[in-house]
Length: 247
Image (cartoon, rainbow, N blue to C red; front, side, top):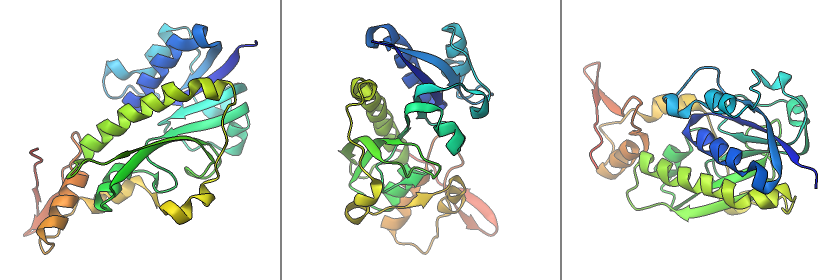
């Protein structure tokens, strides 16, 4: 059987962990990673440098989607650019994205925060086809799980991180063998609803109104207290007063 060629696009710790695992599986599962695209700058510390990981394993690193060659499978995990049709078409079999949220409910960014704000009891992670729209392509694989009671955003992120890596691992054989049945997201909207959120929405979400009741205030604080980012706050006499997360 001819070895399938895979181009990996990704960033952040989850992208690093997925790429590291895929590199180790190449011989056993008969595929070859023929290129990596990631952010040019090092992020999240040297332990999550995808450029270095690819170089150490003799995998070519491409600077942008225009320069990458054709492949059988294009696999994106937290890649920072939106792909155009000409980039997607470079994948002869399929171009897919691992989206750390259930679809069609939460497209775009800040999905962990909005799930808590929306009082959702269930979350998930999804592998879907890439099309030129944001997180709209057909669903190939999905894993759903309950959200713990009074969950904080960093805890939901960690749960989803682990579930996402496991979903990639569990579904790789089916992906390589084309043993999947695409499900159009439009067929699920009546059941689950849909939304599209952008990164800049977090600026407004962090502002806690002191007129809110206790439950709403706590919910928004839990939803926006992500370590490494500006904490939620209220404004008193023109000054930001931050809320610290203790849990």
